[in-house]
Image (tube, rainbow, N blue to C red; front, side, top):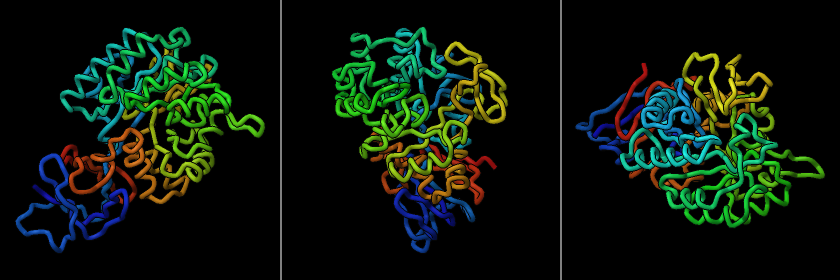
Length: 380
């Protein structure tokens, strides 16, 4: 047992000064006034620092030089997790973009084994595709985009929410019963890579869709006479929306407006690819070469191919460029994603009984240390 002291703690509901976060084993034992902390409890002095619940990334294709689609294996997830920790992300959904049924089954098996071992910060799988609209495919390989196969849908549903936390599909390309099959198993179904009309989007929400993948990107826009998928997402209060806050995928003014409308349903995601956390200058995604140039990941035709964003950079952008309060930006990276995938009973807050996954930030919002399942690790 030990305690973190002399930092400002962003608990998810409060900002606490002069409090100690007492950690025992893998969990938070208590949050108490420092004046009541016993002298026999070892402490870590974090004067001048900020503490938040560890970040949760619901859309992570790769980082640290690796891509999940390229090597569907535990070692890939290990690399992604170790890279994540340096940016404060303690939990994530490895994201498999549009590919074959064979690769999808392999990903289900790998993630299931990770879940069984409860290792590498993996909360479950995000299947982004292949049931998308080719007209909004973005960097996804058009040859692999297809209509749902009932047998494959049954395999995904049978894996359940412990293995598959999130699936992205285009509501206009599937039947309502397909959405219902997945949603009834507790899998979060998201609309994305979609050219849905407003009416088609609403029908998808009524069938069980509860999130939008990378809001504004690869989806029918909001126009006065055609509200599209964007308009439907902004209207429906219960629908979460992922947001890539790198300044390239979405204008910061649009993020600010979306936050006003979505509030606690707006979730930061990175959509990161191999260059995140590395110095790579190119990689392959969706069968295309993508170049990392001046902070952007772009194919030769100018199509954005994921990002090189880290979660702490997204938080800093929300604070410095969108001028959101720090506590709110931190909730967008921790509590709100935990709520979206229904793990907020154990992650996303600093509270007694919660898993001790924490990020420790300097005054200029650099990650200087983390606590992973109770173990303190400094990057200083």
